[in-house]
Image 1 (cartoon, rainbow, N blue to C red):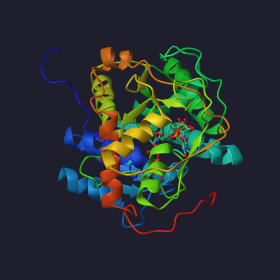
Image 2 (cartoon, rainbow, N blue to C red; image 1 turned 60 degrees about the vertical axis):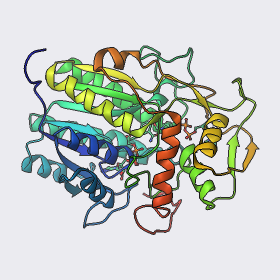
Image 3 (cartoon, rainbow, N blue to C red; image 1 turned 180 degrees about the vertical axis):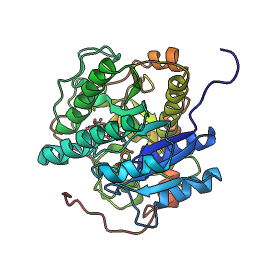
Image 4 (cartoon, protein in one colour; image 1 turned 90 degrees about the vertical axis):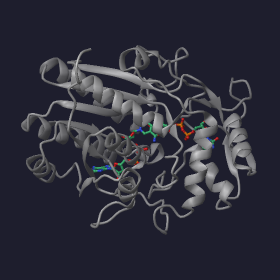
Length: 361
Ligand code: NAD
Ligand code: WQD
């Protein structure tokens, strides 16, 4: 390729105050993009004064983020933001993601995730913006038929509503890219994002109760929870515990920068990429590494398998390597060290608060 690659200037980041969104904004700013971020604080700390996570992002980068407290279900509000800014590309993180909650409140999930996406696509189209990076998930594959999982692996046999919202959106995006060739879309299927920015200034701080392994384990290490429950040690895996492809959130962030570079220079229609390391790690192995690098002890309690859990999954990440020129560089040790730095520097997260497990409506 000759000369400078055409690049997007202003990028709208939805869900920018959230875990992956805030880490990604760091990388976008450091790569010279201007960021307009929106979030409704459904699962992030913040108020009308803005997002503490994004204020930390500004501290890390020395750059400004334009932020709006906005809900994708409020279409006129989203329209106003597009009227104000010449958005060239959207990176769409905003979604609800709690699997258990999605089973109890399917309409809430279809409304927020699917209708939110529809509203966004319509506002984008009416403003002549057709460039999109979408946060999809390895959950669209369901129980894998073979490992590692390539992008060609069938999707749709999903055991939870949250995952189905991602699957339905991917189907919508397919239809859209066939119907109107102005669209230029990359759907990124994340495996299991963990870790935090190495500064310790930003990390994972949801307002809803979290159930994922690493944040839960860190709470146990901090003494805020007594014991880590391991869901099943009778899986058909080397040590009997579930196997996942954990990926450092900053590696995930750089995958978005790579996707934007591809989109800005090429017409791809719709492309799908796995973002994972290509390596499977068991629950037991992750606990061992965490204990070793943090010098903590994690008391374990083995219980029955969690309903809907998959035995083992990890990515074939070679397509992203060849087509995006992207690869992961951070080890499982760094995932644990960086997450622990964030947790110990900010034991209460961004601000002291009472966690609720209340299902919002
Ligand atoms: P997160 O909850 O931290 O971030 C999502 C953000 O979107 C939150 O800040 C939330 O307040 C906001 N939001 C939700 N609904 C909104 C709406 N209607 N309008 C405006 N803002 C809204 O979650 P995350 O882990 O950062 O996930 C980001 C994206 O990646 C999500 O789409 C998620 O489904 C996807 N994903 C996450 C994982 C994971 O394990 N964390 C794995 C695969 C895919
Ligand atoms: C990892 C492993 C558990 C907690 C979820 C979503 C998926 C995707 C990623 C968004 C499993 C075990 C966990 C605990 C445990 N998200 N575990 N004790 O289940 O792979 O995927 O996040 O798209 O859609 O379902 O992630 O972190 O919950 O679990 O033993 O207290 O840890 O059984 O083997 P999971 P997880």
